[in-house]
Image 1 (cartoon, helix red, strand yellow):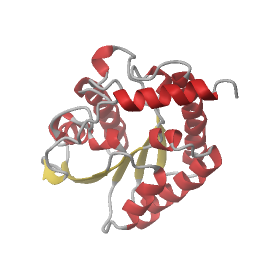
Image 2 (tube, rainbow, N blue to C red; image 1 turned 180 degrees about the vertical axis):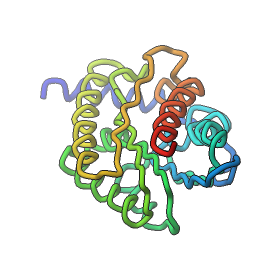
Image 3 (cartoon, rainbow, N blue to C red; image 1 turned 90 degrees about the vertical axis):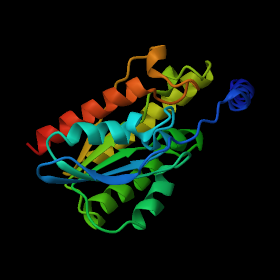
Length: 226
């Protein structure tokens, strides 16, 4: 409780200083490559949408599709929006039609900042994973872990410490949800806490971080669909 005034002041300061970066331009659906068809869905928040770079080719979607297209004909779709929480993404997914072989999710930061409880997060992630597995027929769901928010350069302490602790709690909940679904793999993303891996806002990934993320995801997909 004694920290509340400090945290509130820091949160206001971060919001005032925040650089509101646009989502990158470029296609959000397409077909690329040769070989067996792989239907890919990427969904989630601003990181899934590629905020932090100028073009989708530099973002997660572009880099991941580029890697997968070496072995597959990738039919891909990006459904992600800045500010989206798990609940927002559930609504987005219910509006989709068709089926996918692989779904990648990137969520949690906005659930943390919106004060979503661990139980609420577990319930909503369970609903989302069920939709992806059942309604959209995804046989592999790579649920990217909630980021280590205490490492975000834009966040000062003790705010970074508090948000980081809640992010860890939600990520433990995501791991619990993942264990309930045979299709879901809780994907722990490890990005070095160095300036080169952060966008200029100190909050989103850089092109280099997206490259690492895409390569780790591609390795998982190649291993499952070899």
